[in-house]
Length: 165
Image (cartoon, rainbow, N blue to C red):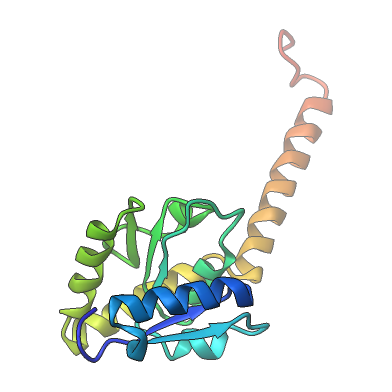
């Protein structure tokens, strides 16, 4: 872990945190790892972050990815949950294999950005999240419902059935 970098680990049971803390001490990085435990509101922690790392083997939906993007935080994630649907590799984050080497390479790439480039990444992350806001999702569902209704109405209208003219 590069000097000046602090790893904030959110989540995990007390037993998991205890094991991970021991592992951090053995690796000599315990002074740069903070175990925050479970949080009901991750937003303040996300806003204080430079990047969200989600190296999971499995996630049902990984809502934290969308929460991070909404806070303008680029995401480095394995292909879990809906991360592959919203993380655009090289635009608002990176999709990686579950391996330390590609994770480290992507984090180093983000760390090397100048302030202007970092701001651009944050803006792209927020724009992605805006496409998935409740308002946008509701509008897409309403549009889908209207198109289904229009198709059904057309099927019910005389002269529009297949084979008639």
